[in-house]
Image (cartoon, rainbow, N blue to C red; front, side, top):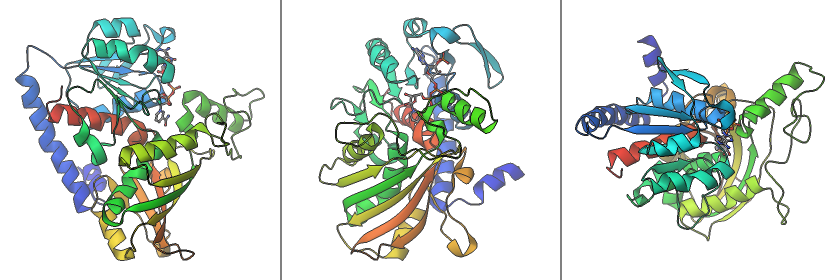
Length: 370
Ligand SMILES: NC(=O)c1ccc[n+]([C@@H]2O[C@H](COP(=O)([O-])OP(=O)(O)OC[C@H]3O[C@@H](n4cnc5c(N)ncnc54)[C@H](OP(=O)(O)O)[C@@H]3O)[C@@H](O)[C@H]2O)c1
């Protein structure tokens, strides 16, 4: 009980309301599933042995996502491996077996090439694929969804739905209430991204370096522990990295506004727990700082932590394992009009991947789109 109360003590009214909604929704889901006894809900998690996949399982459990059958899927290397989850033992299966089982929903986090090859096979069976990779994000025929912003665009025809890039999700979620009020002209973002964003092998590299191993595994081109790499994903002909271009292009697509100017520098740092971002945003209109704070405090999924006098600001260590996006260091950019500086932190494995994907699945069920 104490644990539950502790979880609620820092939440705004908007977020308390979210928890209440979740409780009501779960009751509704149970009733819905009972009324569909002839068609039990089958859910597949593709990439279940990875960092995002494991987090998806935790979020499914915490959100009490309703399913009758859970299929845990990974590469041929992991076939037959046992995973215990929620008091049950599951045997990891391969993709062909999972497709043949015709799940209602498949949440993918197994890399772009696996998605490109297998998501259409699931979709052809009637499965709705929610994909965490970058494979489908910029495909004009696929929706790129952050539920709080654009879930309303989803329809029963959407069989492959893209989850945006982790750094993009937390930035657009924090900007959305401000965009609605003031309009956005330009965004300048610099990121400080956790090694968990690269996957299990990258965490192994950092930990091996930290332990002083002679031949640590090498995922990054340089040492990552005690270092900073201004390089995430591959370099593009224009000098940006692919991660930087994802932030630029995906932001425009999610907001449905190509006129917004975005520039990005993405940086890998030797932390775990979450990605941090320094965001400088120029609005179309002037703003009131107190109103900015109030808009953010009342927006779903956002927690404002902004009390510099008491050293309170968002950090990866405090955002770890949290579903929300944390915002702080709110201050006017005194070098030009209508411009705000903000610091945004979120657990990349949660809202940046697993939480957002599970929220999409919840939205589909709640709105009978499956
Ligand atoms: N990490 C993040 O913060 C984050 C955020 C947003 C999106 N994403 C995206 O999510 C995906 C997974 O990331 P991750 O960090 O979880 O990586 P990871 O820890 O390396 O896990 C990769 C998962 O994919 C599976 N897999 C790899 N090749 C496969 C294949 N050919 N067929 C079936 N399964 C295969 C792996 O299975 P085995 O164990 O059998 O190899 C493992 O379960 C990537 O597309 C990534 O871009 C990651």
